[in-house]
Each structure stands twice: as structure tokens, then as C-alpha cells.
Length: 533
Image (cartoon, rainbow, N blue to C red; front, side, top):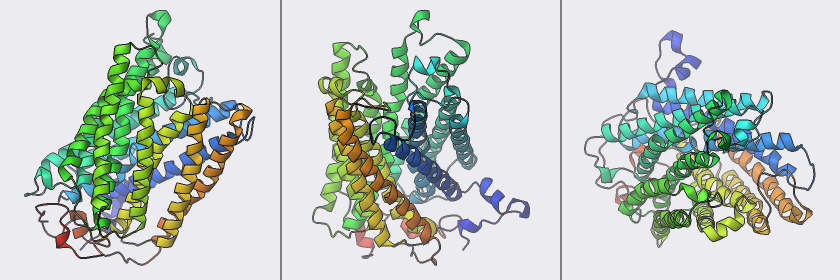
């Protein structure tokens, strides 16, 4: 048996070239893992510096221009280089083919091209930070400021465009793989829920991302050629940009969160030793979120001058899209009810996800209601809500996935005590960091400002203390996982007692995933076939 880490290559293509030219989905996933963690650390450092500046009134560690550049790059890197690509690119690439019983994705060369486009976009984003006049618009690139500013917005927008192209190619690859390469005998209702979540996400990637790509190109044309599409003096409309931007960027929220929900749907039944409650309902809710989530973009624009009818429609649809998410949470909790629960680091992160994501969802209803939205629009309340959904949701599900599938990917078990300690530091720091922002927002503190009134000082001080707890926890988590790589290979094929096909192959998987053709069961979560881990 040959491990994918030791793929046979011609002599001239060994070593580094064997990785840079690989077509194996597992190696490409590891290339993404290394790159994503690199960008994640940079984004964490930038966010930490922003929070340190806001810890006290007045100038603390940086001036206004540096602050604007730091929070712009923090947003761009965290959204476009971590939150959107991390789950599909790493765990989707590694696990989707194995979960459906095949040896690779449908377009291996396109898969490698996606990684190179991702790396190119990341390099452009970093270069824009050190070029003359780093970008200062925030990650939304709102016009007219993004058109009129003399900073290097064009390069950052080009980076986001390149990353969008990478995302589209990945989505196309996953859709084709699920349709064409499932092992014979695997019907649609025998597909694991993580793969279902990636499938729903891929459709959003494929259909929504072109809207953003075209919009970003229009910003470049506006800056270079002065086309006037968003300039009222030339008959343009700046609100048009907001419609185009949020037509992608709100569905992008579900590109970020749907794979995370799929991760939780895999972890909960394994450590409850019970079949997932409501398999078909979870599948339907994933597709429902992908569909309904594409129709609610204008709830970001209630203060832009919409008609009362439009406000009512988009507010109503925002409440509707909460129903599929509530179905998932109900199914997860119901699965744990009377289950034989085994506490592990992946389950702990998953439980943190359920709580934090629920808080984020409930506060999202505050923003989905036009009356309360107008009061807290562009305040720190929005910042807190956004991070509860994105970091508390996608971030914690990513951490859960790392700890759940790390033994499968690398064949190593990590130290549980350090994993628990890092999780406690992260969740404690998270709560202390973002809960005060809800209060600051209700008090009226605007977001994106580098300074504030004295009355907001206590809340920002507590938020800064939360960052001082959370960031060490994040680094401890990474260090703990990396330290496990120095240990002997000690992870069995199925360390947790899972039932889906990835747990039927050795850890790490062989070169072509399966030693012999897999036989999918009638139901992917039948725990009568496995023992207790």
C-alpha cells in the first residue's frame, strides 16, 4: 500500500515539484491547509492590532491611515482567504471523493489551477498592503469612496476577483464530482451530510460568485476609465453597487457556514452514538438555505432609501431563511437527546458552535427587522453579530473539523488536554471580546472608526481583554496540532467509531483512497455496524 504522501513521481518531479504539480486531491487539500493557516495567522495578527488600537480612547498603537489599512486587510484576508475557502478547499478536497467512494475529483487539473489562483489572489492582497497607499475602504469596497480614494484599492479588488474565480472552479468541480463519480450503489439519500453541505455550497459558489466578480471588475473600470456607472454626476447610482455586492455577499455567508453545518452534522452523531435525527430534513434545509439565502441581500440596505414594500419583503424573507437553520439546530440537539455521549475536543468545539451560532442567528433577526436595524445599522452591534456567525460559526466548526479529521489526514493523535485548554481559552476570550460589542452598538458606537468617545471606553477595554485571552488560545491550538506531527503514527483507521466511508480506509489514506471498491451501506449513519471507540 502506497500512502499519498509518497506518490511515485519521475525523478525530475520529486520533492517540491511532486507537490506543486500534484493532481491528487489529498495533496491539494494539504497545500490549501498550509496556505489557509498562513493567511489565518496573518488575519488574526491584523485583527489583534486593530483591537489593541481600540482598547483605549485616542491613539494607542497606530494612526488613522494605518488603522484603516489594517482593518481592510483583516477583513479581506479573513473573508476571501480563510472563511470562504477554508472548509471546501481543505476538507472538501480531502474528504468529498472518499465519502462518495471514488479516487479523486472529476477535474484534477482544474483543482490544481484553483489552488494556484487562490495563491495568486493572496499574494496580490499582501502586496497591496505594502504598495504605495494601502487600501482603506474596508472589505466591502463601497463606492464612491473606493473609486475616489488614492490608495491602492485596485490591486486589492483584483485579488478578490482572482479568489472569486478560484471559488467558482472549486464549486464546479464538486458539483460534477458528486453527480458523476459516486460509487455504484450510492443513491442520493446515502450521501453523507458533509458532502451534501458541500454540494449545496458549490451551487452558491457557481451561481453567486460571478455577480461579485463582475461588480469588482466594474470598480476597476470605474477607477481606470471613469465609466461613471456608480457616479451620480454621470447618471450612475452608488446604491446599485450595494445591490450587486450584497447579491453575492449575503449568499457568501452560506458559502461560509453551510460546510460548517455539515461538519457538525458529522460530529454530533459519532459522539452521541446515535443516527442523526432528521437526515432528510437536514438535507432539505441545506438546499433551502442555499436557495432562500440568495433572496435576502437587501436587508443590508434598509437605510439606503428603499420602498416600504421592498423593506417588508426582504425583512420577511430574512425571517424565513432562519427556519432551515433552526431545523439543523433542532436535529443536532435531538440527536444528542438520550445519546451515549463521549466528550472529545471535536465535540466540545461542535457544542461551542451550536451555542455561538444560535446567538449569531438570533441577533441576526434583530438586524433583519427594519425597525431595529435602522437603530443599530453600522454600529458595533453589527460587528458582534457578524463575528458570532462567522467566527463563532464557521471558525469553531473549522476548529471542530480540524480536531475531528486530523487523525484521518495525518495518522496522528493530538494531546487532548492541550486541545481542551485551547478551546476554553478561545471560547472564553471570544465571549469577552464580542459580547461587549453588542452593548457598545446599542449605546451607539459606530464601527470602522479608529477613535471613540470616553463613554465607550469600558466596553472596548473588556473587548481588548477578551482578545488577549483568545489569541493565545488560537496559537496554542495550532501548536498542539503541529506537535502531534512529531509523534509516531498512532491513529487507527477509525479512532472515533465513525460510519461514513472515510473511516473505512487507513489513516492516512492510501494513494488511491481505497484498497478495494467500497460498499456503501443503506444508510450512512448506521451505528449498529461499528463498535464503541
